Amino acid sequence: MDKLTQGIEQMQQHNYEEAARLFTESIDENPEEPVGYINFGNLLTHMNEYERAERFFNRAIELNAEAATAYYGLGNVYYDQEKYTKAQEQFIHAVKNGLDEADVHFMLGMTFVHQEYTKLALPYLLRAAELAPEDVDIQFQYGLCLAQNGQIEEAEKAMNGVLQLEKEHSDAHYNLGVVSLHKEDARGALEHFNRALEINSEHMLAAHAKAQVEQALE
Picture (tube, rainbow, N blue to C red):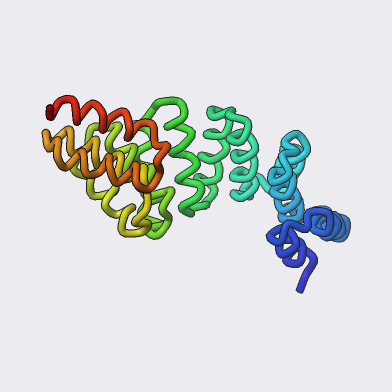
């Protein structure tokens, strides 16, 4: 097993010092190979050492301007610091350089969501949802974005899909309650708000919505 693979294993086991040692040795042995810098950058991002991580990803890009995962890593550095426009640029570079994985499309979509450009977010979240049908977070955010774009029936399908993956998803029930209100089904809405509160008694939005519906029904 090479040092990069060992380093990734150590990182997954949260043995960050050992991972750093292995990545450093790998870079020393292959200083012109971008992959060592990318892995070290990922490790530094995990450790919230964003300035150092940025330097490592930029070094990887200097060595190979088409290193898609370096752009993706750099995007994560900016995203974690809430620099969404800068993150967006890097994720777009990653996609242009051939990275077609759920995570990059999801992160790109979320940069638009955070800037309230939900129309622009939708195609990226759709692509992420297609690539990762079993990923609860991706499916939920896609459903939420559909709702924000007024695609209520599609949003309902997506939220029901989330519940198939995770029955106890309080936010999916809350959003299905909101969908029911759009369809003027107050009783159906109440069922979903109650279910959301059974799963999470501190779900403030569900509690507020439930009180309003009960008041209207009275």
